[in-house]
Length: 460
Image (tube, rainbow, N blue to C red; front, side, top):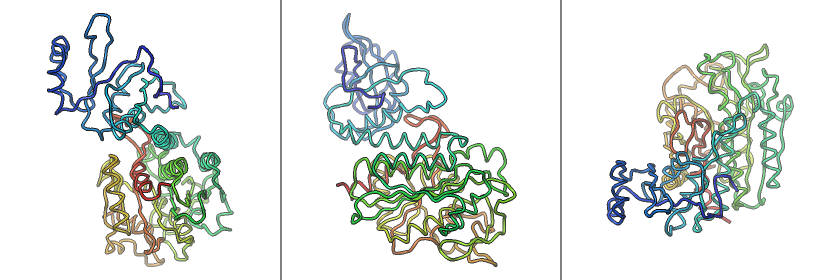
C-alpha cells in the first residue's frame, strides 16, 4: 500500500466534501449560517483544485475540508488537494461511483509523489481513505507504473547509465516472471545492431540492447520500443551547457515502455509482450562516431550522419528493425526525440505519429477519456526529401530546419513495415513547472492513454 493511502479512517479522519462550480451555490444554501459566513468571508467560490478548511459546525465538532472539482472525471483537483493539505487522514463524504472514486485516488496519489532518493520530504503526505467504490488493485498498479517512470527519469545519469537501466529492467521483469536478455558492447556488432553500437561506443559505459518478453506465445503480439539514451552530450556535435542540463531525461522513452510493460504485466492483459530498449550514452572520445560518417543498419540500408546529436533515431532504428522481424500485431515507440515537438506542442502533450488511422483514433479517444493528452501530427511523406543523402540511402538529420518532429518520425518510419500498425510518441517526459498532481521533474506522457487503449482491447 502506498503511504498516501489508508484503508482505516480512524476517529481523527477529516472529511472532504466535493463541490463543482455549478453545484457550489446550491450546496452553500444548505449549510448553517456560520458556515455560509465563513465561506463568504474567505472568498471561496468552488473553483476546481481549490480547497478550504471549514470550522466545526458545533462546539467540540470536527473540522472538514471543501474541495472544488471540475466533474467526476477530474483527476488533477485531487492532486492539488494531496499537495496542499496538511498531514493527516482524509475521507470523502457521501457515496461516489467507481469512476469518481478511482479518479480521486489516482489524482491523490499522483499529487503525493516525491522523489526521495537523495532528499527526505519535509512532511508526511496526507493519507486518503480509499473509497469503497474504487478498484484498489488497478489504481495501485497504475500509480506504481507512473511512479516507476518518474523515478527512472529523475535519477541522475551518474546512477542511471546503460548498465543501471538494464538492471532496473531486469529487476522489473523478474517480478513478473518475464524473460530478460541483454546484448552488451561489441556483442551488438556480432548480433547485428551496428547503429546502437556506433552511438554508444565512445562511452566507457558499454551500450546494450535490453529485450524483455512476457505472456502466452499465442496471444496478440504487442512490441514496445523505448529510446534509452541515458545521457546525451550531443556527441561531437556537442550541445551547449544549457542544452545538456536536462539530458538525464533522454532515457525517458525507455522509462515509459518499461513502466507501461510493468502495468500490462501487473494487470495480466492478454498480450504477448515484447519490450526493446537500446540503452546507450552519447559521449565524446576518440572513438566517437562523426558527422558525415556512413553507418550500416540492421535493416540493410545505409545512413549518413548529418548530426551526431540526432542519435536517438539511430538507436531506435536498429531496435525497430528487430521489432518488425517478429511481425507483431502492433508496435509502439516512445522517445524524447525532438525539440521541434516541444516547440509545436509545448511540454504537456505527447506528439503522436502513426501509419494506421484506426490505431491513432483509438489512442486519441483513450487519451481524451483519461486526461492524458496526445496530439497527432502527420507523417507528411513529401518531407522525406529533407532526409536525402548524396552518399547514403538516408541522412539522419538532413540539411533543413523545417518540420523537425515530422522528419524524425519519417526517419523511424523507414524501419517499420507499412502493414504493421505503428505509433510513435515524441515526448518531453518532464514537468518544467509545478502543477496539480504533476511536480517538477520526470513525467509519464501518453502512458495512461496507451494502457487504457490496450486494456479496452486485451483485458483478460
